[in-house]
Length: 340
Ligand SMILES: [Zn+2]
Image 1 (spheres, rainbow, N blue to C red):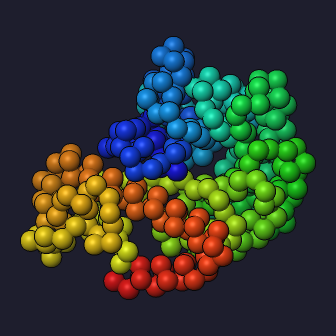
Image 2: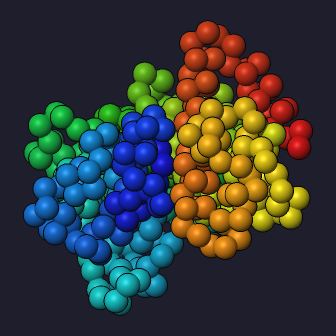
């Protein structure tokens, strides 16, 4: 899922997203709640109409953003109190408020409010936080049953930091409550990569395999393929669009930074093996010039290519899984990708 924090995937129009083949985007509840405000979006016809995106929209609960961006936040038993990073105004949201906001936005897949712990964190603290997350998950499901007419999905979020037994307990309790899909939260917050992979492997194997398993906030092409082999089905990450705006593009032979002087007179496309609109029509030398001159078109072209690259990678991964050759596909891709 490309990330559309402010109700837009930065530098790209919904028409272009459709052309690339994207079918689902993520929007951030925290940002849209503060600006322009969910009531404004509701008045203007809901998030799909507001943004002219007729594909699927997943909205996060805002928990992660509140913990990572808000200058002052406190998770109380009943909800989260926080200050806006825009104007300093004070807010208090319960798990039910968060769901109602997502429903009024017209989200297709809503996420429950959770407490995202930082890393490292002590066992006792992680356990207390997890109890709160589970209590909120129960409250959210009850509220959801009253509000939803079976047309949308509600996902639970697995927390428990890097403690395997807490992750296990969380999965067990969430599955008991019953959600339409399950996300792994609280990862990619500073823990070592090997520990993260261990937790993903362990937790991924416990989640119901007939429902979507979603890893939040990850990752690079190699990480996506590694995590798919650990059982993950869905991802979101701002990385491909963020690095694109800085002039870095994915290619079959690894990431390339267009600011490098060696591309100044390069007549080739960004990636010789890519058949996207950008690679068919523009040279690396021209796009490098646009990036160096901070021209908007440069950022648009690199963003288009990076999203196309990842979307095609996921299409190829799905095909490889269906044809029972995913491990070889992954190995070949990673080998070529690292062979820079
Ligand atoms: Zn391309």
